[in-house]
Length: 527
Image 1 (tube, helix red, strand yellow):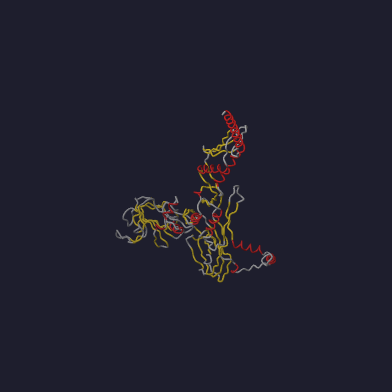
Image 2: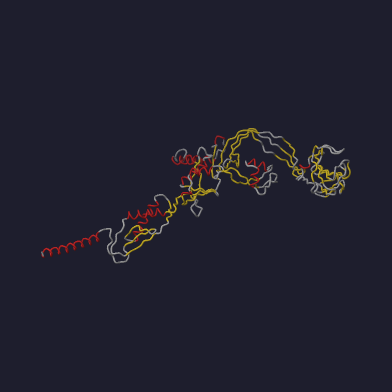
């Protein structure tokens, strides 16, 4: 009985020794445990937003798995992700500890990062057209947008667009260029067979022909149609990173950039323009024209040649400038030739020679911005029959003006037919009447020579003045005359006082303007 107890006790001691040795070897050789190193922190916990992701053996290992997780979250697309995450690496000095595998760590970190993403910025291209901007996802979309504007007019697609770096800018900016695909094709053909008759020998022949060039050219030598294309706006393309919500899909961008919208522009007034005519010419209402211009208060506002008026015209955001060569054959008119006479007023013109149409063939270069013709140039012309110009003699002197001959007054009778109110008064009124108190100052409507100053039946006391442009003014029913016959007076000079003399229904001034002895409506000539 004693022997068995001793043996059992020895077995228990041996068993414990073996277990301790096995445990020591397991701790020493298992890869998930860090051996004891009494040199400071020897295991590190990655903590994100207060949550432990796992443990690593060193801070460099922590940086490595964090970078790997960031790459996985960002993916292969060129994007910038804004992640609001608080990252800590906490070190410990432990006797032994278990580290976390890289795959588990990266997975845990990715899950926490994805919960912390605040915004994703995608690589994009901002197209700036003057003050208008649109954002696109790729450079290919930018080119597609530019070509959509070009092909509105270049329906045969001879021209295409590309982007090039603007080397004059400090910051990298792309600018569009328009490529003539026909020239590119010609260049390719030239390069592929340079020693053919179109290559080296062709160049040699060109040099020889240049000594005695053949200057003759006919209408068949021209390539008709669009010969040059460019953009009429300042266009810059800038690479950027933007939220996806700010990036426009290509179909929407093309619609926005190419469709015609009402845009403000400046119209310069030319001779013969009226406000209603300008409104009709640009396709807006007279009310819209008035609302666009603070200095225009109504449809009768005065405008002068050279005035700049704000109008709206339908234009796309991106305008295309193009030049087209066209063949024209038909009649033409020679420009009018003027002979100037310094003794005549500008209102006087006399035709010295009647015109006659000519006939010609021509090549014209027409320059457009969008659908508007902005310039035409005759490149080549062959006259079949010479046009005869119209020759006009015209005056250069500025004609005199006419002003209302009194201040105030109420218009009581207009020019033309009226009912006769008293015996001896004509039923056709040859002037206009302004009711005014006796003694009101009467002025010369225009400078000239007094031809009559005195009494005349019906008119009572009256004054007649002849003017340099052949017109005559008459002032009747006066109470007092202040000038004499033969006297020269200036515009606005006081010549009489109003009254009620002659055949009159009350105090007023009767005023006439006559041309070659015939009475006309004075209101049509007063400024």
